Image 1 (cartoon, helix red, strand yellow):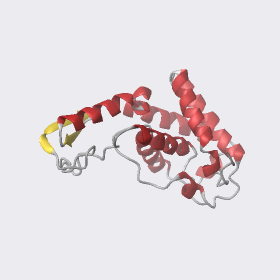
Image 2 (image 1 turned 180 degrees about the vertical axis):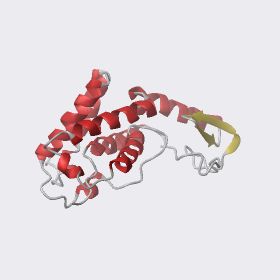
Image 3 (image 1 turned 90 degrees about the vertical axis):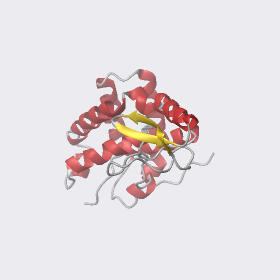
Length: 199
């Protein structure tokens, strides 16, 4: 059976696209193999190695104080931060998959999946999607779900229900849950590979 990129990722991609439209830039990771980035993730210019910030144990360098300020503002305003950052994403993914793997409507999609790898990938994806500092470069939702046999609205709704229950159980604020669920609903056509409804 083909690997199913869990439908929860649709929410993340939509939020990633939504947050990118509101922010000046979505920064790339600063440290690769322990080296500081040489290009500013905000301006695209060479960095000044004296202008840095440490965010979630990673150091990011910038071309100017203004770029560093934009980075910090983007982090503060992000849904990622409002949800609780890395610790919250980790907890949500762990709890979400417990629910998904117990749900007879959708658990069969994961029969042949390495769940440790899937959880790691999903944590990275959702961190980026919710406005974390490392961007997602994987497939979009239409491509990821293209050709999956028998994928339908029942499956989409099951994932959405499990996501909402996860967020509620983690005591996420209702207004944040509402935001996530509204964006999730907006991705249904892409996930189910339908033509968008005429406006």
